[in-house]
Image 1 (cartoon, rainbow, N blue to C red):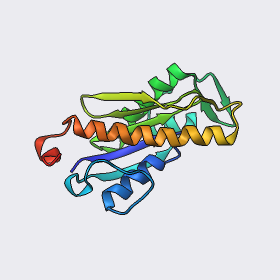
Image 2: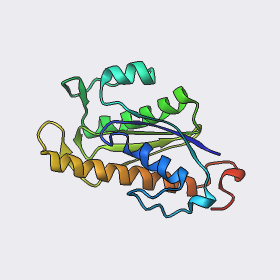
Image 3: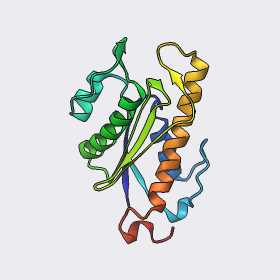
Image 4: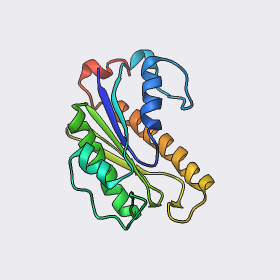
Length: 172
């Protein structure tokens, strides 16, 4: 059974929550296209990590220098978000010993989500452009929702790619 851990910023731990709900078989907000009875997964950990200190102490790596820091929250430009999401996905996988790591981060731009395994990493941006410094709460929450959807869709695509040994995806 593949194990998953998340290191999330702008998605506020909701990716881990949705994955856990899927794994346990109870309905939640995201409608998975894969059959839960045919895919057995386990969530090891879901971490909400919006700060540089959190990245350093929980994920054990030195983060990129952010564009700015607001009340200890790291704020990156879009290209930095893409790099950091990948690094967070790889780090949370390593730190927790999970088979899959998912990282999310967004500051200025659309934000980024990444999913990593031992030998692959995929990343995407969300559909909603926002700026942590200036966008209103409604816009930031729209980007969050888009980030959760993007991460979960990317996870499904990752599973369907056949990333795991045959015993993990034999029913897909």
